[in-house]
Amino acid sequence: MNCLVLGSAVSCNDVLQFYVGVIRPVLQYAVAAWLTSLSLEMSDQLELLQKRVLHIIYGGSHFISDSYASYCAELGIETLRVRRDLIARRFSSDPRANQLLASSDTSQMHMFTNCET
Image (cartoon, rainbow, N blue to C red; front, side):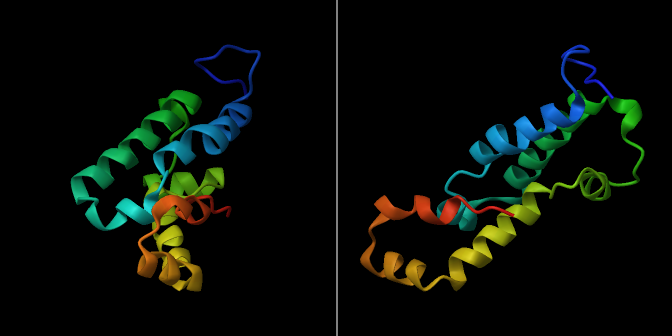
């Protein structure tokens, strides 16, 4: 299936992979540092952004699932909330994180935000 917005030269899966590999990491940048201050409203706004991206890529008629989470599962991606939770758990269980927090050296924070699934 070709992407509705970008024309017939680019497949929807290619555009999705670009989003997952390039755009979504920007939305998650330094999540371990700002997660505790993220309000529910801000979290919902981030999810809304991902919903819009999926709607742009696949079009409204391709949203066949009852929920956003199940649609993400069909596409093989996680919701941003799930990804934030995974990153936070990895960060809190990593012994290097405790050292980093104890020393208050934030210059090495980047090594915890680049998590692959």
